[in-house]
Picture 1: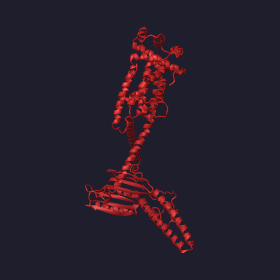
Picture 2: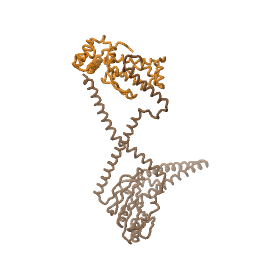
Picture 3: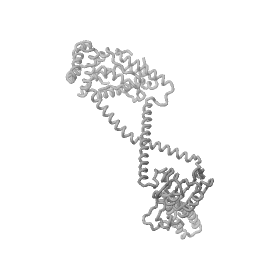
Picture 4: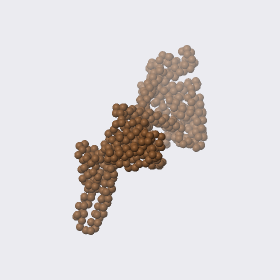
Length: 368
Length: 193
């Protein structure tokens, strides 16, 4: 460069070196990502990790407080089953948890398992089984339309040599509560499993009586809320009944064989739907009206009988569900973390800007 | 000697980075003069020139041929740098860092050569007023250097300080005056690019 300024010549030399280096780099394969993005990717990754960390901490803090609240509830109401957080988000609620070597005293927590007051709709569908576990709910003042299927499990250690007697007592408890033993299996004469069905209204009572048979190893009760499904079925039923009524009216007015046949065809389809929905409603009512309790009895040292249901076969569907759940959990944790992090970043940004502003204002003043 | 036009050089520099060096050779002194006449400060003018060309090199792929002279794009960057300098009183070295060129001190000889680029005639009166706003040591150094026309060695001798310190006082004083004149809306340069 033809200039008298030395610094311009030096800069030209450096610029030229840089340009030649870039030319060489351009000749070789380009990297997948430009270098200038790397710091931003790193910052984003750090922020995500930070957010996840905060989210995990916040989550564990939340769980801790929930657990302590449950513990407080248990302390205030000894003997009651402590409500645990929902196990899934599909309307299934879990009540109670394992009680190692601890007798369960008192009644099971309050849950409406025997609904009432659906007589009005029952009259529109004569095939539907009369609702309410005791058949006396039509006069009940508060109308509770919730439909919750309740199930329970209890495992007990009984005294040596008492298995046969206790098995008889299980059958007796089922009978006095208006239920029966659905299935049973024994192993070696000192342990066995029983599936007991009792009216939902007597579920708590039966659970309590069963818990008195020995030392409770574990106990749990679940409530599956099927109210939404039940309400849907009821709504569909109403539509199909009114459609059937209309078709009956049209049948009366049909003048030709062709019209009658077409209407009959439609009527058959509607009736089929009504029968299907009636079956489903009856099934829900039956499930709601009766509860299932799985009872495991075993003498000390006996091999515990394992029911076929207890065998946990691997399932791809379940694995997929768990994988999706895992992804959602991670996203949720990061979102929670960002909720904490973003306000902090905003405050830090404001502080940084203020500091920069002050420094810039001071800079010219310092030079004088 | 490259016969290509400025626009052609800029466009070619996307895939042929060395073409940008030719553009630098053509316009570096003009850009330096542009800054010297506006900042009155040799150090600031040199820094701003280097930063402008570094920024232009780093963003040469963003240049679009809109039909205007390619130099207009270069002076657009220069104006941006100058505006930031007047706003903040500081010169950024971000573009130089980005392309890996180190910041260097201005050689002593270049100080005086850059000062020669500054035409103080049109602003001499305003300059005298602006001098009053300076700190004593900067004002004394400036008077000896700009008004009395002494060399840095003599300025240093009169002030009883090192030559480098005298140069710095003059430089900072000029920078301060440029800021003051800019705030008063006085034009420091007569040429229009």
